[in-house]
Length: 114
Length: 114
Image 1 (cartoon, rainbow over the protein chains, first blue to last red):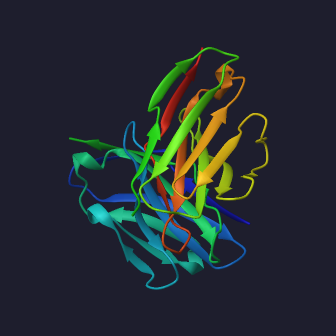
Image 2 (cartoon, rainbow over the protein chains, first blue to last red):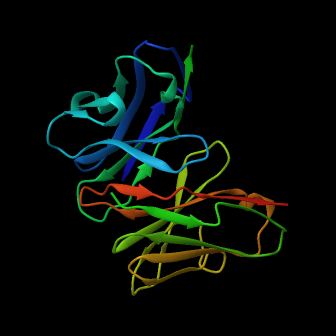
Image 3 (cartoon, one colour):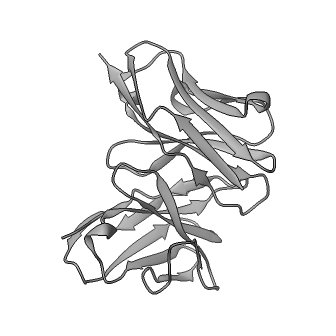
């Protein structure tokens, strides 16, 4: 079974500051890991994914995440926050076999302070 | 990535009635998923719908309450039956991506039951 824990339901950063959203996973098999973003009144958009290739994964909109097996973490970062980054962010995990369902974390709401 | 549309985008319904939500994809996909996102919460998988077979429901969700149809490889419907205020949620459909268990999401249907 797989699960993810997102630390911090709300994160606020100043515009131009570093964004760090935390995600720790638990998995009985090598995991696939995902970050999704949900803008207000919209569906979820895939930001990036880890599928056992490079441990540092680059995604859209300047976001990246690093898979650290020793820490069972997959934290999302962006060097410089932009006002348009304000949204809800979800970490998700699945097993590394095909046709496996995603398990989502509880989400982190990111607020950008002008 | 696939382009997914949902109808209706939102609705306000009376308790005891039923609402059918449609999900249309611009390409053929084997697996489609239906999720519920209750206010301020994460996504919970309701069921997985494969074309040509009965939907597979997650624990806590039953076919009588959430019947699903999957008549072809580009379309699915979810019905929320005998609604109560507790069914007020965003309902999202998603489809499998190209490998790695990633999913692409529709914009969601925002349901309010009064």
